[in-house]
Length: 199
Image (cartoon, rainbow, N blue to C red; front, side, top):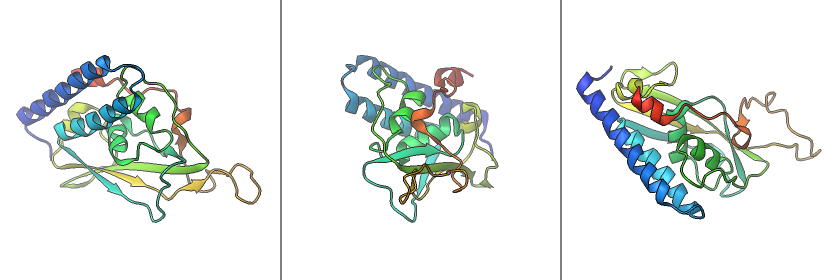
């Protein structure tokens, strides 16, 4: 059920304020402050989602993800909303996390590639409201802010090796049911957040 125009406008203004403050802080960071920038990105993602009235629910896999050495894959184009939810749900030590962070919340000094490995950690994102699941993720911030009781669900799927253990050959990920792409190979940037906020 959509909100009345007044609460929707308030959410958009709060989200715009969060992004503006974070952008200023990002400009003040030295390029070498990688950890501080990563913390700023994950905190900004959480604050934007909160400002828009969205909650994130993380669904853990049956097989736990590795603490280090995994490589993040996304099985869809989640848009800005999905990217922000992924940033709050996926460990920053996962290879490919930085690529998602730098394309969704680009701050000064970004672009550095993080380590990854042959263990593929795939995620998918769904949304639901009090009225039930949504058939597709909302794309525009105005549509997101208008939803009541929005929950963004980030599903962490069981990790899969990118190579066959016995032969060392690359695994057929499509045949294995993983329709995903490594985040380190994604070059297309998501829709600019500032343009969406202004819409």
